[in-house]
Image 1: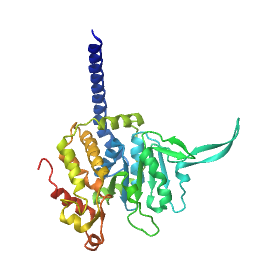
Image 2 (image 1 turned 60 degrees about the vertical axis):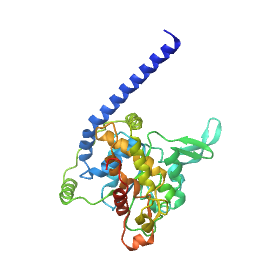
Image 3 (image 1 turned 180 degrees about the vertical axis):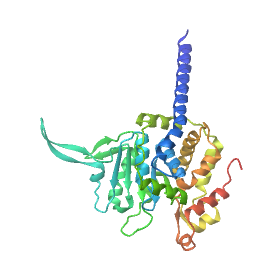
Image 4 (image 1 turned 90 degrees about the horizontal axis):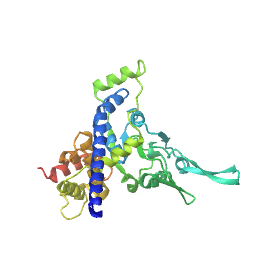
Length: 347
């Protein structure tokens, strides 16, 4: 056998092995979907759409901004998902006096066999899943301490790079009420969150179930089903899911239509929007659609996957003007009209 033929055989074997491994990872995810829901149901009532969006972000390697009123189990939900995937969880309570070093870590002087040296003590950001609770209650300088961690998965202290543990996720919560004394997140940081997930009040029957559970015996403990290596495997698998060119074009057109005063921008965008979504929105739309397809047992993306993720992707990326505020127009209304105006490839 010639050298070229040998390389061809080895290449075919490598592709076959990779395909077989991808099939095993996909089957593990599909078989584990019901188990994940059963485990989370032990402590979380309802919120199916919220759970799915956070799982999609997890499988995509993206960060989430979670918005909801107090007492809606935001912290419990994130902690429970971390437990299911056996991820190291850290909660940081953001307050006005929180300093950047309180998040990333700091250098302290320690005695060593070589004498006194500055040693870096890792902060709570060195975890797999970090819950930044009420992130808008801390000043911009401290908020910015998360920027490098979220984007580069590293922390730099005194010129030294400290890689974060993988997988790494930031889930930040915001309280939509009691806005006095808060610091709105800058657009540059908002754009680094894949989704803005909104947790709303439960239905009456679901709320009754919560009251019953929390005023009686303790619920069962959550059993871990996966680990960090599984999550990294799922993330790698998500990126192999094929997506048709016309669906990518649809995602790009949808994002471009949200930008006011551009050629072809809808009139309602020019009327109500100050700033539209950037390229990262289209990236997250496509990547999230791939993860959603896998979660639903498919190995291909549909137009419906893109439509279902439009609201969490756009919520924090479209900036409304004063006219929209005066007329009671919400971002959700803008996204709905966008989906009606920009027709998908299957329409």
